[in-house]
Length: 183
Image (cartoon, rainbow, N blue to C red; front, top):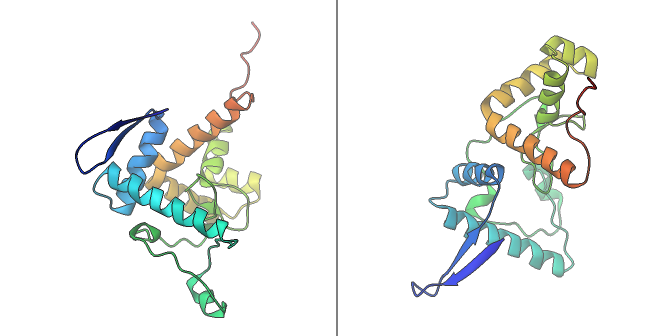
C-alpha cells in the first residue's frame, strides 16, 4: 500500500510504502549496486527507467538487450543512457550468465534453466556436496563450484530471491514445505 502526503518543500510528495523485509533488502542491495545516495534517488531513477521503457513500448518499439559487440550490426538503435544502466564492477564468470527476468537479478548457469539459488536449494534439500550435485544434475563440477563461489559473494540477494520465489508460490496456492509427517 502507498500513501501520499503533500509537502511544501519544492512541491514534492512523500510516499510511504509497506514492503516485506526481502523487498527492503533488495532495495538496499540495488541502492548500493547503483551507487545511489538515498532511497529517494533510487526510486526517482527507477521511475525514470520504467517511464522510458513504457514510452518505447507505446511507440511500438521492442526493448532488447544486445551484446555491445553486436550493436554495430544493428541499422538503428536507441540506447538507454542512465547512471543506473551500467552496474559498477561487472563480474565475469565462465559458467554463469545474466538472463532477463521481471524481478530476479541473480545469475543462472550457462546453457541450463537453473538459477544459482535453485542449485543451492537443491543441494541443501538433498544434502549434496558439489561433486554429488554435479553428478545428480548433469553439470560440470566447475559449474557447481563457480555457482557456489557466486553464492558466497551474493548470498543475501540469492536467499532473498529464494524467499520471494517461495512467497509467490504460496500466493498461488502451492505448498512450499512438505506436509508434516503423520504421527
